[in-house]
Amino acid sequence: MPVYSYICKDCGKKFDLLIGVTAERPELKCPQCDSKNIEKTLASFGIGTSSSSSSSESSCPTGTCPLS
Image (cartoon, rainbow, N blue to C red; front, side, top):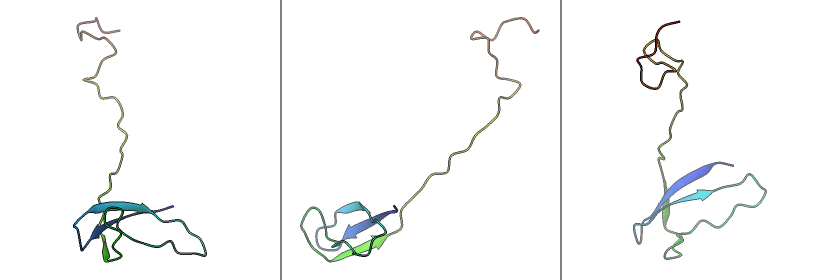
């Protein structure tokens, strides 16, 4: 289910709503003042990356272990 970010145009509260994919559309309103005068905003997102060990990283905690 996607999460959408909104801002209330009456009180200025920023909030997120989890919107399911159902036949019924939930009532969208501000959780702080119950206003329906809200606007969808652009949400930020993060992208995770994986990295492999580089040659400078060592399994030796002190970094002074002899090379094998």
